[in-house]
Amino acid sequence: MTTTEPSVREELFGASHRAVTVGIVLLISLIAFEAMGVGTAMPALAADLGSVETYAWPFVAFIASTVVGTVLAGRWCDARGPRLPLLVGPVVFGAGLLLAGLSPTMSVLLAGRVLQGFASGVQGVGVYVLIAAVYTRAARPAVFALLSASWVLPSLVGPPVAGFVTDRFSWHWVFLGLVPLVVVAVVLVLPAVAGLRAPDGEPPAARPGLVPAALTAAAAVSALTWAAEDPRGGRLAVVVGAVLLLGLALVRVFPAGTPRATPGIGAVVAGRWLVSGAFFTANAYLPLVLTTTHGWSITAAGSPLVVGSLGWSAASAWQGRRPDLPRALLLRAGFALVAAGLALLVPVTLGLVPWLAFLGLALSGAGMGLAYSSLSFLVLSHSEQQEVGFHSSSVQLADQMSQAVFVGLGGALLAVLVPTVALPVLVTGLVGLAVLGLGISPRTREA
Image (cartoon, rainbow, N blue to C red; front, side, top):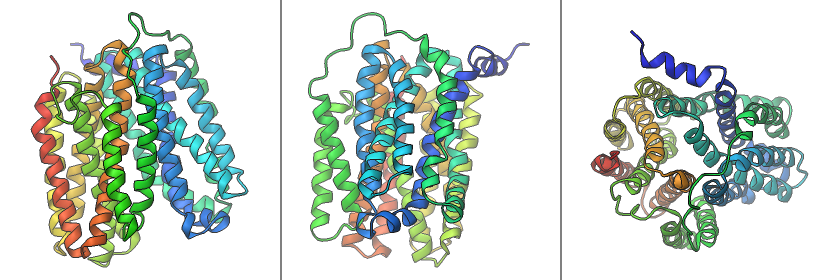
């Protein structure tokens, strides 16, 4: 009896799609390696080109330009198709790597980071639109499982490799070493991209104010990222103001109905906001909990994050082999696992049973593997041809913005409360986000 799995595997790695599958996985892996490696190399980079005061700016420049690239790519893909973003994006990313790797000053480095961030946003949207154009519905869960796996290896080996390269050679090679891989990715994706055409039918509906809203969101997230580094005094006011400004901008760049999680694409984007904010914020603060409250070393405190990454990859691979399961049901299961896993972290923040961090991250990571891939699938299912770019950019903005907002709010809590109070309050609030996502999951069902 013929099964679904061989046909899906053939679609991904058969002669017609093998190059594009490997190419998009490589594109996402490059972004992941760059993200993981820069954080490791940043102390040496700041010591060489700047100072502690400029430490946050390479991150701020990347995040702000990613927002702009994500919004503009969504609009372009709906009007003209993903061909140009998928050709220009990697080239700009490679140029940013070269500029950063050869930079003699902090200002030149920041210019390189702007190019990298912009290209990262453009590529992310282009890949989603390419998946909608190239792969069948049955193959998409497996494709998104591969994209999830594209982040696992970089998260495991990226920091130690970047540390070795920085110590043995120079931080410059953390950027320059990725340039040849960009060329390979472009060569692999080029055949599939060259044949893509602009979407048929009516042009996408006009979205007035989209570009100003994107620039406003970029400014707000830059201010929030900067202020969250030390949210005290005047910076605390900046955190609050940036969150309010960001909320006004997101009304324009998200689909109508997102704040209310209305059935359909509104609930899908809202679900991505909730699950990303809950999981990634917990990941950001768990090492702080384990080092300050339980006295673990930095290396030991990072171990639960590795467990979470492996759980994510395993669950994502599992759902990818089951394309016939309802994605809204898998999303509900994913939110339940995220909520349960984060709930196990609450006693850890209270100074109790630190080893619960491993079980908590294993459960919440598995939940992310189900929820994240399901939401990616549902984005395409709820999108007409002329909306795929806009909706794809919306879910990726939801990822970026929710992490900035909730990590920033966590810093604000630490500024006004003692850590033994702030951290339990923060993680309990993140559990609430996951429970809210559990409640709205049925609204993502396909008609």
